[in-house]
Amino acid sequence: MELNLLHPYKTLKLENNSGYYFDTEHGIRYTYWYVAVNHADDSSDLYELIYEFGFGNNLPEDEIPPYDSRVRDTIIKALYDFFNKDQNRVIYYTCENIDGKDRSRSIVFNSWFKPHKHTFEKKDINLAEIGLYSFSVIHKNNQYKKEVYELIKDRREEYINLKF
Image 1 (cartoon, rainbow, N blue to C red):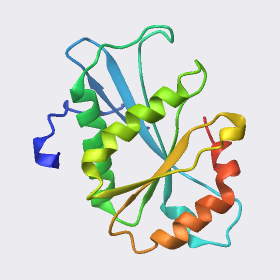
Image 2 (tube, rainbow, N blue to C red; image 1 turned 90 degrees about the horizontal axis):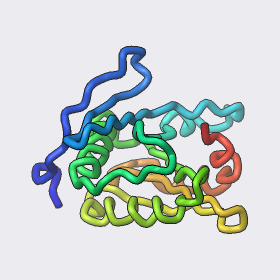
Image 3 (cartoon, one colour; image 1 turned 120 degrees about the vertical axis):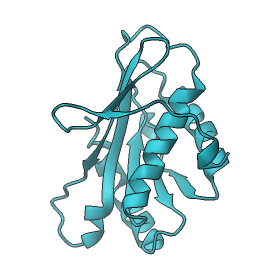
């Protein structure tokens, strides 16, 4: 699926500029955000290219939102917009595990990215031993791809602890 085939919802900036939001036709509000990873280890300038990505909705934890392909389209468009600003940036995402549905979230995200594999590389960085599912997303044209993958691999436990 090409970007021009997506049908995203209109997104707006949150009042405090901490992220973005959109409302679905089902009346559900989603927010998403990017947070620069500040790392105490200044040994690599590559850290300034890594951003934690997160998103969620305003439903109670035990309520499952109805399927809405436009949510997927909106999140994918947000990633295109993010990488259009700098193709060397990196997204790091950890699937929420509060409700035990982190594996399911990982499967959903995998399906969202498959049609965009010509633009993005998604690399799983799972810690099966503690049941966390996470991954990085890198633009295919990222000139620091190899170095970033090594950096994330070396620091994966630490990145997973950045979950907020």
